[in-house]
Image (cartoon, rainbow, N blue to C red; front, side, top):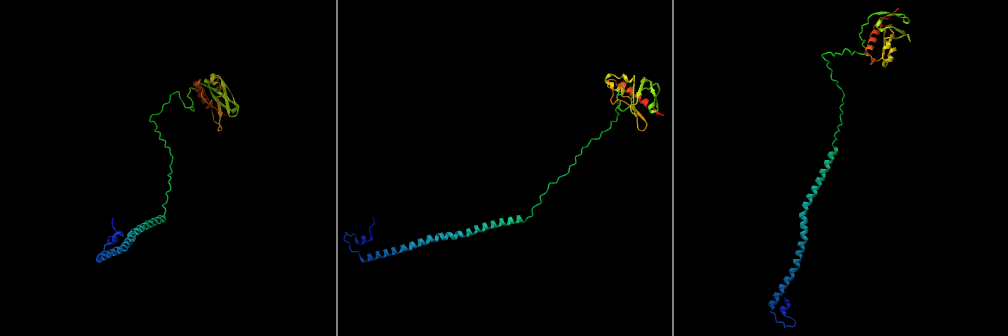
Length: 233
């Protein structure tokens, strides 16, 4: 434990102070004054250093703050200019869809005619083609209501007629009555029809008798030959 300088010079109160030479006492007092005078100066230097440190850092940071602000302003300005440039650009025209009209066309491949004629069986004939028959002997067959005469094929057998209208003649007879029961209605559907130009044609059933097709063709052929002989006057 250090003693008080005064105690070192003068001793404790209990002790009897020894006389100190005047030269030593003077040197001690000067040293004490010098030490005491340095305390306010050191405190002022430390205070000034502490106050100057933040100011120095602020001064050093100012250029970087300015650079950052300028950079931010430049970026904002570039964005504004870019948006204005985009707004001034004319919008590109929207291309409307083009519809190409399509023509639906169905092409039928041409039919190449066969080089060989198609031969039909002898038994098959078109429905409007008169069957070819042997007429044989004929007799005179007068048709009074029409003021006409005709040559009646004897193969048709005996027959009679009636004229329900001015243009229709219906026949009945042995050969017509020979159609089977399946074709019974055909027995009274044969005859002749007077046309507007004065000519005549065969009147016959609309369909062929499936039960007796040969008889149907024979009667049709013989009546066609008879109608061609009808003459008025």
